[in-house]
Length: 121
Image 1 (cartoon, rainbow, N blue to C red):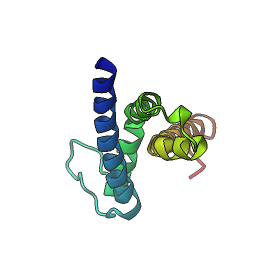
Image 2 (cartoon, one colour; image 1 turned 30 degrees about the vertical axis):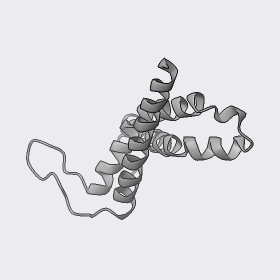
Image 3 (cartoon, one colour; image 1 turned 180 degrees about the vertical axis):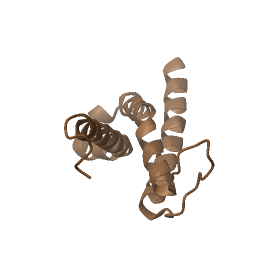
């Protein structure tokens, strides 16, 4: 009984996460180029950038939800293991790719600032 409740909660969280990832991907791909936050308190940011950062922040919860669905729904014992694995973990991999891209840009920017003194722009 307890495992069944965890399975239901995991499926609900995963479904909500997939819907959020789809909406944020649409915002990152087709979002506006207008500056959303133009006040003096916050950094100016486009909708595309905000969606991309939100995808990166959601990496850990999405991968955990994907793992829960994969584990509790017995996907390992299905006939199409590889296909189901890819389809279930695809939203988590999209978030992970966004996070890795942001980390790589941070490292490249740090190297540009410290080693090259900002001459590479």
